[in-house]
Length: 127
Image (cartoon, rainbow, N blue to C red; front, side, top):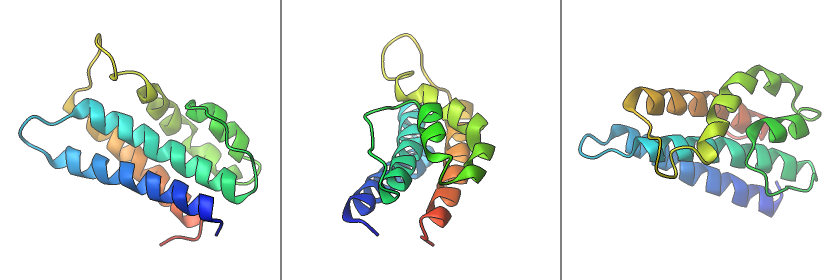
């Protein structure tokens, strides 16, 4: 595995750890944070797969655009388009005043993140 791919995976796993940890917090949980880091985890796993294939990784946060880039290598990931589209909104939403996530939204984001992470790790030969 390329060193840069490993770095993307390490960063993705850091985001995943935050998603899991913050999802369990009972006192003052950051549901916004769960949603943001779920999006970030998925984004970084897509970028890891692109990197491993030798595709230049752009500074893009739109998961649908990234999915379109990675589909030639991972055509089965099309099945995750709905989930990735849902997560994509959290790259910016909830990061600024005007909108906030609730527990239900955060748990849905965590679920979608978990599903995609499993597929991404399998594609990268992990776990």
